[in-house]
Image (cartoon, rainbow, N blue to C red; front, side, top):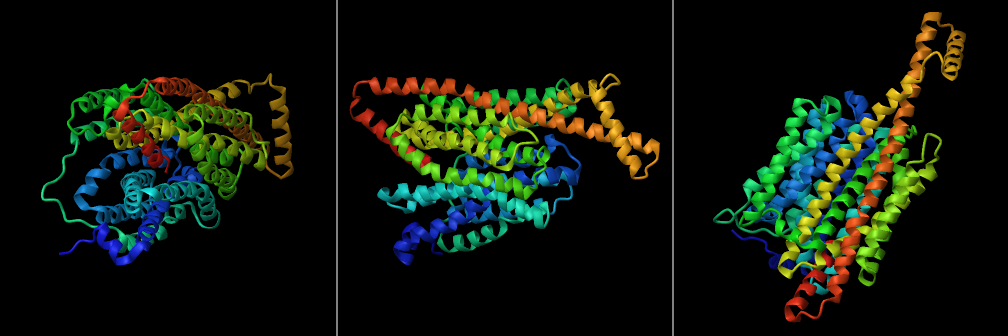
Length: 543
């Protein structure tokens, strides 16, 4: 039996092969990234369809991101067993099965399971495509190839919410899950032709199964404990037990990774102060970027009354601007201090959400779109510089694992950020609802006049008096609930801004570390090799 290696495929298809395999992989990546962002505009519709709250609905986003991290750490092992072609086509098949399951889900539990399948398969598939593109291009053209990959990853979130809004507007929220299926099918067909294959190994490669089990236990305990705390009570036995199990598993994971021969995550890299500071910023960056991507579409639909399509259109200018900013920010990162660019980006992002915290039901479409563009402008300048800063201080043999660790931490920050922001949002909604309800008594003449006016209108419509009073009180209750939601969103946006400002401290530590490295005397061949490794890693991670 013959196997199609990269060399065999290059000889078969000639110089065009590298673009053929790039197109095959990018179609799959496009479908996976689309699925991550399109569902956010469907959250209010899903909540209404299944009668669930934010604590359940947010799992559509956070479960995807959490399982994506699990897929990332298993990517190398699965590829080593199955080879590139079988791994990618299997990931696409699992992803498509999750899409069909999500679109036909009879309840929220099946829907969350579908997102788990999609997230895991995306975690396996996306790094594989990036590694494949990197391997088929010569060294002098890898930068442009990674630029194509990065542009595809950025472009999908720009159009995703709008496509999701179109599906909901003219069909149903269920069709949001079906958007990615045509891209997945085309990608699978092309991958069967252009992706390399290899024989099955005679012996399974080693994998840190204990570390993987501890990581999954940690994620499950902490994330479910934080997500369900508001509903079940933060002091309830179930929530306390989950959080304790998650904390114990996290401690066990760290201790095990320090002694494992082939760790999933090399904990020793975090002894490097520059890398550790960049990792903290990456976690907060992921929380701010992905958490806000969830919050903003939900806010404009629940508080502003936007349709899903209008919510998607509001997010599109920011996404398109981000696609333009990324290449510019990458070039600036080569000439300016990356740490200073990170700090500047954090300030712009925080200022955008400070402005967002002042929006209410009277804010116009273009005001909200402009504020969203400002916050995304900050993110655009953070990402390339952060990738470069994270890897510059690492030795050449640590660069590959360092890049994987940085992506892992950023994705983990997105998963936890979404959960924590939603938990805070629910807590503040309840707080404001109770505070506003306490003011609705007979001494509140404004509310009394409102009730009288509503009763008069209902009476003019021919309703009996007892129904008039009940209808007026129900209307007042809906106003209190709506106002409490707006106030809670404003508080949550303020917290997002505060978290971004908090990240300036590790970014400042990062800048001091970089200045200290610059002041060091020449280190000879070893230092040159380390700087060379860090520079090449920057180019890879910028993609």
